[in-house]
Structure formats: structure tokens, C-alpha cells
Image (cartoon, rainbow, N blue to C red; front, top):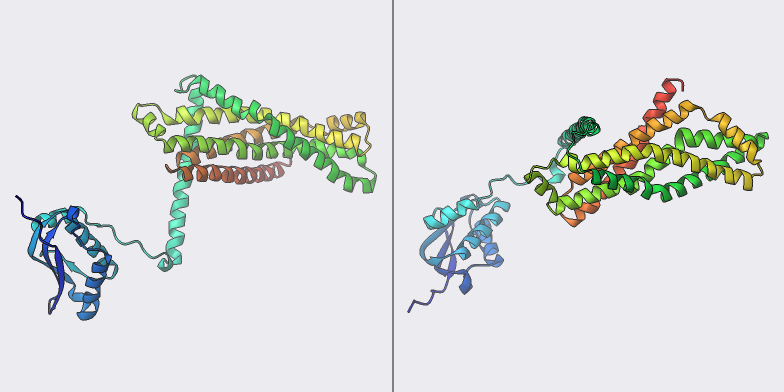
Length: 381
């Protein structure tokens, strides 16, 4: 018969060399061996009060019997607590086998700096580095989009046609109801707001000019892009982030399928191709909304509204709106896919990725629209 395990024990001894922890008995996990947080606190208290802290803590294992992970857990907990209290620990008195195992669990990383003690210059530098890295990644993604887009146009991209068709439907026909509602309401609002000022000068007829030019030149492209950023851009980010969390993207890389061609290109091409069509549709229904308000509530004649609208809209304004809508589509698609690919692997990360895609898409669309406005003014257009 095997001998019953000796009762484990430990004792704190003091001396000129510092605090000595004397270990006795068998430290076996299944038999309840080990010591809890109270023991660690008592040992640190002895090291910090009874003796000078720089002398530190050492071990005496001459009376130690059998041991397993219970001893390792105790020493590891004591080591971490002593490091936080800046008390040195000398483990040379432990068995050699225990020292080899403890060396494998040694945490060599430096302690994290206190955020409250980080200087302003350091924070500014870290922020600048993070922004520059993100900008470089975005520029790389835009370059890949241009290169792979050219390959896709010539049929050399490894992209499934079914994915492109599904993405086209989701970015096109499925978005028509919300695009219709938003642009009709915007057109009606423009007619109402314009009538407040134009009636003071007896120029009610120019409500048609206001609605037509505003919708074709600015509002249809901008409002459609904002709607698509919230609807489609967020959906892209959530879908890709879910694949990232379920390790589907890792599986694609393992079997040699190019992730960019398989996931990003169908979405970028679909949204880029549908945005000009949605812009034209949004312009038409926005003018229709202004027409209904002007005729039904502002007492304008239908023929006068139509004639003024046709006379006020120039072809260059339609081209300008088409160019803006294409740029908005590329921006929204890249932002959604970028946020999804960079997401973490938890369920919360999916929500954060979708939120980031919507915010980046909307802010980016407005900023890009401001750039277009400045360029149009510089070109005297």
C-alpha cells in the first residue's frame, strides 16, 4: 500500500537574508494541496514589514515531499503578487524540476504602462503612427481595388458570377424602396423651403428650378449615398465580420482562394455599378416629390413646373452627379469591407464593425462631397 500523503505546510521565517518560505509535506492538487490568496498576502506582508523589502523572498524546500501543479500555482501566484509590490523573489531553493517548469511560465513582457502616466507627446506619437498605418492600409486596399477591378473587367479575377449577381441585387433592386422614400421626401421638403423665400419676391415658378438643380446636382447623390452607407455598407461589414469570427476567411486562405477576389470585389463592383442608377432614379423621384408638393399645395401648374425643370437642368450637372455617385459607391464598399476584415472574432466585434462602417461611410461621403464642391467652385462650374 502507498503511504498517505504528508500534510502540506509552509512557514515564514525571518533572517538577515530576507523572508524565507519553508515548504513541507506533499503539495498535491487532488488532495487539496496548495495555498490560497491569504497565504500570498501574509508572505508579502512579512517581506514588506518585518524585513527590508529589497532583501526579498526565498524558498527552503528541504522538507518538501511530493509535489505537482499545486506547488507551481502557489509559486506563480506569489511571483506575480511580488512583482506588483516590487518585492524580489529568489526561486533557487526550489527543486530543479520545478524551476524548469516555472521557467516555461515566466512572463517576460514588461508591465503595461499606467495610462495616466503616459506623456502627451507619447500619446500624440502613438496616435500619429496608428493613423499613418491605417492610411497606408486603406491606400493599399484602394490600389488593390483598382488593379483587381481591371482584372475583373477582363475576366481574369477569381470571382464567382453568382456572388456578383447577388451583391448587385442587394445593392440595387433591394434598395429601391428606401431610396424612393428618402428622395421623394427630400424633393418635397426642398419645394416647401424654397416657396417660403421665393413667394416673397413673387417668384413661385422658380421652385421648379430649385428642386431640379438641387436634386440633380447635390441632394440625390448625397442622400442616396448616405442611405446606402447605412444600409449596404453596414451589411457588408457585418457579413464579412461574421465570416471572420467563424474562421471562414481563414479557411479560404488555407485552401488558396484569394479573399480579395472572393469577398471584396463582388461587393465593390456591385455597389459601384448600382450607385449611378440609384442616383438617376433618386433624382427622378425627388423631382417628382417636388412636383407633387408644388402642384398640389403651392398651386403651380404642372406644365410650368415641367418646363422650368427641363430648362434649368443642364447635361453637365447630370454628369457631375454621376461622377460623384460612382466615387461614393467605391468609398462605401471599401469602407464596409475594410471594417469587416479588420473585425475581431467575437459577436460584439460584428456589431462594432457594422457601426464603424456606417460612421466611416457617412462621414467619408460628406467629406468627399465637400471636396467635389470645392473642385466645382475652382473650375467655375
